[in-house]
Image (cartoon, rainbow, N blue to C red; front, side, top):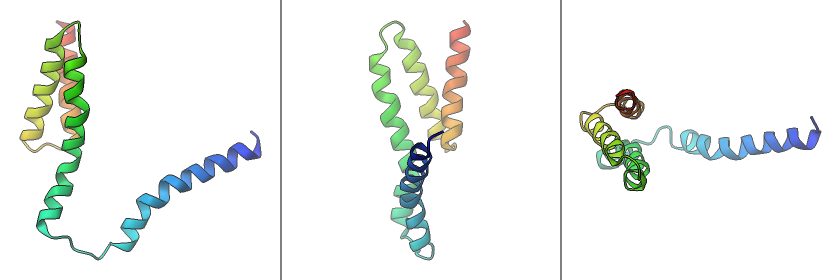
Length: 100
């Protein structure tokens, strides 16, 4: 592998690592107010909703497939499941539906 490519990979790693590490290093002792803690805890669910909801309207063959995925993800999120559990629940429901 050429050295330019190796240095480019290292530089890209630093560019993605530094913005993630800096807030943790700078604000590790700062206690956020409960309102902001609640907002930050809901960001993954809002992001997941922004990814799933448009996909429901873009499915042309079997609209029930999109609706089932949305409903299963919504129920899992409503019950307070972790984001990965929400995704896995939706995948499981859609896998079972695809087998029928």
